[in-house]
Image 1: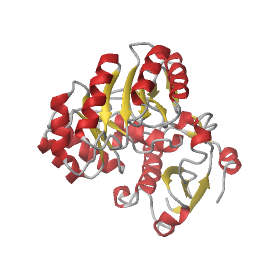
Image 2 (image 1 turned 90 degrees about the vertical axis):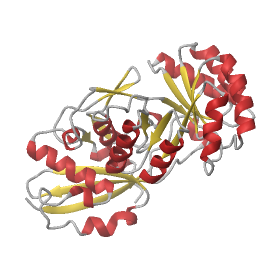
Image 3 (image 1 turned 30 degrees about the vertical axis):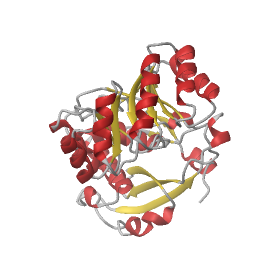
Length: 334
């Protein structure tokens, strides 16, 4: 078997309202399709322009996809090669990461930083769709009002993960907000609440609130450092699939649960890849941050099923998905 084509498609699919009014374009997305002379094709997805991986993609031409080490490639090409290998062997991509321990992967609903009433309306929609967690971007000047409105709209069982992108900045600010939010009673986690260059601040904040603390990290060295400082209750893990597997292993050794964000507001290709990986990670018990459902359409038309706040892990060989080329061309910009 030989690789005959590697196609890179830059696509732009707008977010749904009201998110589109705040973020008309979240980030650049490129799809990668690897085709073979045996009729098999594998898909990958990444954030960025086609040029980012054009040279690596061209280097695959003429190679046998089953002989290449996929983990030596950039991650979207790794995904495409694993997709082909899984189809050739009749096994799902999850098999290349380990034993599958769950058939459904939990996922949070998600909101950008918007007006509190708009976020509350989004939470009400999320609860109606069966989600039990909501990841929201928040700022110190409106987070308390936002959480009060969310609780009124979605109910006390609807849990909240607050990601202020470090805009609480200092421990005294985060601790004051935590006191007010604890009284409301629906906030589960602070993710990156204060500046991240002083891990002692996270350890101190853990002592000042019952709200759990999480850091969003990808580099294994940074994860190990956070674990050694005992400054987190959870970790949000990003990066390549191999990197996430490595950092999840470090967290598991420290008995720290995690959740995964490989794509965020990505499309179904990267979501499927992430879900396959998460199905093999024992400590990935928190809802993940893969949100293709926040866009008006997806290029994946079969294989990714979202049901009651969970992704069903695809069961077909490879990624187990169907990519609609008409939609790829419809939303193609490069």
